[in-house]
Image (tube, rainbow, N blue to C red):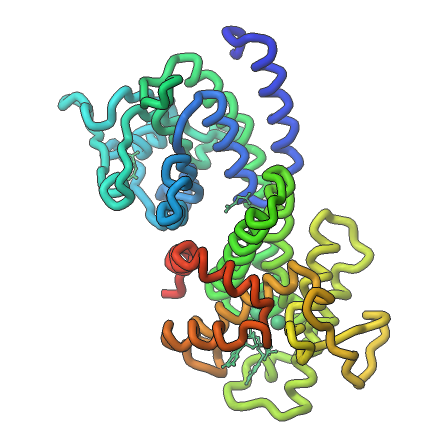
Amino acid sequence: MISGLNKNKVAAILEITEDLNQIKDIDSLLDRVLLAARRFSRSDAGSIYLLENQKLRINYVQNETLIQKESGKKYLYQNHAIDINDKSMAGYVAMTKKPLIIADAYKLDESLPYGFNRSFDQHASYHTRSVLTVPLIASQNRLIGVMQIINSLNDQKEAVPFRSEDELVVAYFANHAAGCIEKAKMTREIILRMISIAEMRDPEETGNHVNRVGAYSIEIYSKWAFNHNVNEAEIKKIRDVLRIAAMLHDVGKVAISDTLLKKSGPLSNEEYFQIQRHAILGARLFKNSTSDWDDMASEIALNHHEKWDGSGYPGKVDDIFCETRAPGLGKKGCEIPLFARIVALADVYDALTSQRIYKDCWPEEKVIRYLQEQKGKHFDPELVDVFFSIYEVIRAIQNKYGDN
Ligand code: C2E
Ligand code: SIN
Ligand code: SIN
Ligand code: FE
Ligand code: FE
């Protein structure tokens, strides 16, 4: 099917295909699939919609133009669903399971059933012109979603129509990616189920909480890494593992009695001590196992309640399998691993901005004041600055994975 392409292109495509099989996290996978499709079609933007309750829910967005603008990044976290019918391009492609090439979304022929929804363009001050939409089809002709690629660019960076070669390459990625996406989605679902068992919460609440902590963590990391000149390949590799490891920070709660976790009043010292054990217990769950994220997950579980000023827990522990009641000497500053410092901030921010069985959610100004006040006490001061420098993105994530 890709016979019209030159040899180098084919080799590059095969290499990416190989790469996709290695990725564990669903968002990293969507990121990579979309990036590959955009690279080969030289296009500015794109989104992936996945099928969810008979609708297409937007799952992943890339936009080169908007990402260049600091204030544009928040548009990459969207939350909307569209119906599968002939009223939108994406809905039409889902319905017909056939690719669709549109030269100019603002000049659609009146006779076509679908229209173009301009609300994204209007909000984000973007101009969509050429649009290539392909179905994502897994085995047995099952539709799992739709990939939409926007604004093919010429050498002058002007949006031009897609070529039929673009359709071939993008459809090729879409077909290969569909199976990988299904697998990664299953991994995510299994992890979420594990976490909801561990934390004794209902699956919906758990999903939102850990999705937010995972997303905040990778965004804080990415900005930190950018400031420290970490190269892009390394950043992507870390993001793939960090999101999952961050989501798992509290699974040690599986070993804590649910009467404690569900207690609405204040905790006694002994009760609080018992709950604090979730850090060490979590770290144990990941030791001596073999998946790529285990080491990071263990490190995060163990250290996510350490504090920058040394007043956190469990402190220095010689052997996580050999517990004593005496608190370890506190870990301080950079003795606490970076990823745990990141998750500490993400977790507390999320705890304060959410309702818990033992507390109400705090008003936004109070949370902001608290984080600033804890800069250098509970939290790494540099990370607090990073956090507020991407605050719009943080709010967009909250909006995307809201409890409502
Ligand atoms: P969590 O609910 O996920 O809270 C994570 C962290 O957010 C807490 O760690 C704490 O650092 C911060 N945090 C949460 N709520 C507040 C608050 O109202 N004020 C302040 N200043 N910080 C807050 P921490 O304290 O080590 O607690 C770890 C876990 O222990 C909590 O996870 C929760 O599962 C449990 N827990 C803590 N306090 C209570 C309580 O009073 N009742 C119950 N049932 N559980 C509690
Ligand atoms: C994301 O930004 O949500 C995922 C992309 C990645 O993990 O690299
Ligand atoms: C939308 O964002 O509503 C979908 C765009 C389209 O495919 O028409
Ligand atoms: Fe915790
Ligand atoms: Fe937590």
